[in-house]
Image (cartoon, rainbow, N blue to C red; front, side):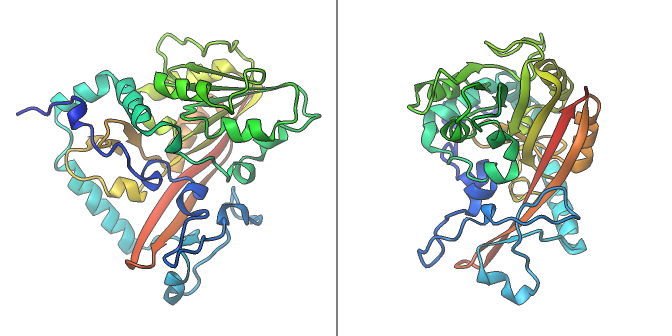
Length: 342
């Protein structure tokens, strides 16, 4: 019997933020501890380390016996035993991939699932990304009163989680920030928000991998200073990557930047997938019908390096701890910056 891909089969529409986004602040910033006391926002206590492309965090697990002392630890490296265990889980997933019938159905209309996702979750699903100021300071440099004309495009804007914090901090009369999303419902949520300021902001439906090369409404070719891609590129099928890079190249000014964050290979959410979820190598369908890919640093160099200068690529490894249940959860995200050549 073939799977019915109607709305009755779209489950887990209220999955946790940790499962969906996995952003630093959204996973453990100000999250209640087991005692009910809020944990500090570790995403904003960062110090420079010369051996890393990004700062990320500075809470290091030096003694394994101390693992249950806090909810999160930074830069936790894996041992060989963990890598072997992860590969075993991926091999198990390959034994029962998505059927060809279901795969065709899921790939035929991906926008439908994102519309349903935002229809059911609305703006309350995601928190504002408090870590943006630390991880991507260029966004806030653009908000300074004397920054001059700056154009920012957030691809996959969702409910405006990058747009609105930037707009809220803005003192630049010449700042323009645009949000675009594959989901028509997401764009409606942004436009209907009280935080949406049409004087400085715009929002439209756009396919990052538009095969015709169409650009977002209201944005001219080679006019954007910064393209923000946070947990959006992973929603594309691998065969869409080249077209997406071509489209972004057309948007950016010479010297323009791409600010990137997304899922890394062996992330907890990848290893948790059960049978019937694997679409292709490291590419999955979630229970709600949305898609996700898990990258390596090498892949990002290959994908973006064809058209852009690779400024830096880093892996953010976090050990999240549920102290009450004595569970360890390893999160892996990739963060990068690319620049269009002059």
